[in-house]
Length: 100
Image 1 (tube, rainbow, N blue to C red):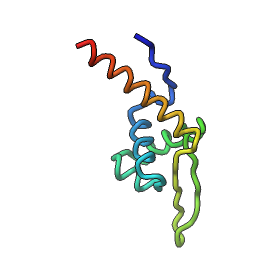
Image 2: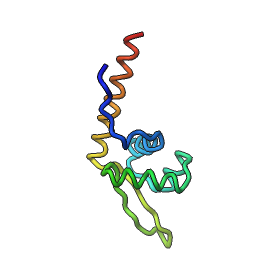
Image 3: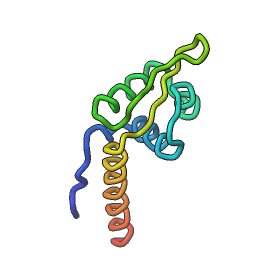
Image 4: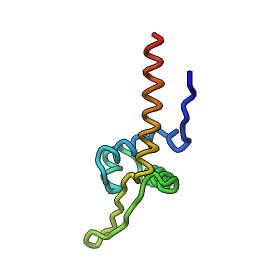
C-alpha cells in the first residue's frame, strides 16, 4: 500500500478541525473558531500561529468598535495542500475497505 505523503502540519487533530471549519465557513474570527471547536485561547492561538507560519492560513487584525478582532481564512495554497491531504487519506481508506 502506498504510504501517505503527509505533511507534519496536518498531524494534529485540532489543526485538522480548524482547517475543516475554515474550509466550510470561508472566513471566521478567533471567537467563532474557539466556540465552534471548543478549544482554549492558548491552544487555538498556538495552532493558528503554526498554520499561518506554514502558509496555510492568513489572518487580518482590525478593530470592531474598540475591540480587536482577528479573522482567519485558508490561503489558496493552503486549500490545495489540505485538499491534497484529504484526497490521499480518502484513497487510503477506500483501499482499506476494498481489502475487507
